[in-house]
Length: 425
Image (cartoon, rainbow, N blue to C red; front, top):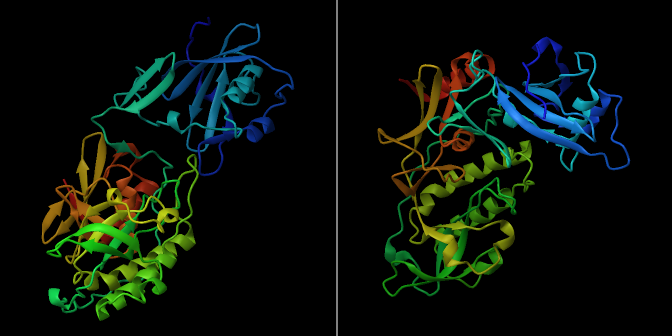
């Protein structure tokens, strides 16, 4: 087994470009930078993790019956730097480097190296990191942030591609319906906030309102069983409804047309297309039209659809939970906290001057507090939703090393400060 030697000078590393906007190395790129090729017969290559220090991953590579050699990998924002203890320089990749990298590629002929991208997180003298826990055992090499630290921004991480939708003017609250104005027939009509996690692999969609039929209890205070979901105007023709419900139903069916979002593969990072963002912006305007109408309705519930494909089924009680759409507008607040070696950005929201911590299980277009998650507050703009969705990925906390607080990230924070209340601590 080869003894680990001193890491080569960074000037001696070969530079392999990564796929634009990613940390992916492909077999095609590897082949463009080497004359070696994978043989047609079985060629045994054994690769073992030795250590990860000072941003450099050291691997042992053994080809067939040859002695093990060392290769060194350093991941930067745009390139994979590669060196070997034999026959690699800035102009040439060794056979060991080529076949070692080739063996790391997956069935798609690519490998994402982001797990090894930790710029400036190591002490240059000791080679160790105070921020990371690194496990190296027979099951592999794992790198984790220590539990006391939040998610860290790393240069090149995607920020928000803002979609500026229409501003939502203040709307007057209509007079609420009195209880005896509701039709007394059974079953009764109610409304679901139909929702699913946008980054799931099911038939995804934005949250939208949809009417349902249910059998109420004798005192009419709650629904004891759910009969059906009303998917079109045809389903409502034989049902007695109020004028307010008629308006609300029209909004519901318009919402559903805008709601679908393309499902993503499990290996692909979720992001909305430009068309989906525009649909989301228009859908949010419909939510504001429905907001005050919904206050007059007795039966409002959250419903996890598990995907649009399951919507025609009879509603499952297990997928229903209580909720209330509040009339108060939430105001987003950014906390910028100096933690010494890094800054911490935290998202909060304010309702009636009280500051709330958001609930971690977020619902698109809404925000709710961790202490009272059943109360949903409709966000004002689509950009508000984008900001909440961005921070929700990280538990509403994003840290950034002070040496990384520049360029794109600094501009991002300064833009937030012009649009949202920012509190420095």
